[in-house]
Image (tube, rainbow, N blue to C red):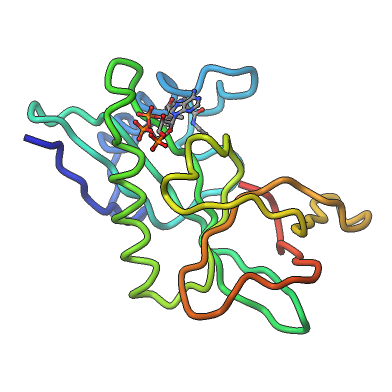
Length: 173
Ligand SMILES: CC(C)(COP(=O)(O)OP(=O)(O)OC[C@H]1O[C@@H](n2cnc3c(N)ncnc32)[C@H](O)[C@@H]1OP(=O)(O)O)[C@@H](O)C(=O)NCCC(=O)NCCS
């Protein structure tokens, strides 16, 4: 039987849920800087929406979060989902759980009128979920000018990814 996937709104998370999420995130993310997950359930900025997968015993085994963000291009602003904190417990990896979670997320994004989904990660992990590398994405995190950043994008609605420079508003995720 495949594990259950559920949507979690951030405001529904109680103290026990918070501890459970921090346990999952800090088990999966072990690079320098990832210690933040021991004390909070997000890397840099809180976010409203996440999907979690539980095994038959009810244990959290995988997670995907999304930030509500926007990009500006061609004089327009587009709502985007900033995919973050994608992780699977070490002993459950390689079973397609990331693909399964992202399929749920993408369905939700279609229903909620997002134009694009964007993430920063290993192209080999996300290619099979429809993400392609973008060479025209810029961030201005420090307010000292727009700088190119390597990201991956997936088209969610009818609009094609813009050909010109695309500015991601706010912090990376
Ligand atoms: C990255 C991570 C989420 C992948 O989990 P997983 O269970 O292996 O993912 P899936 O089984 O759904 O695999 C999805 C795809 O990623 C590929 N993949 C997974 N890990 C990979 C790796 N280290 N290198 C290259 N490809 C990888 C799989 O082959 C699969 O590709 P396919 O669909 O083309 O066959 C997991 O290794 C993890 O939690 N890592 C620690 C946290 C982290 O770094 N998260 C990523 C932040 S961007």
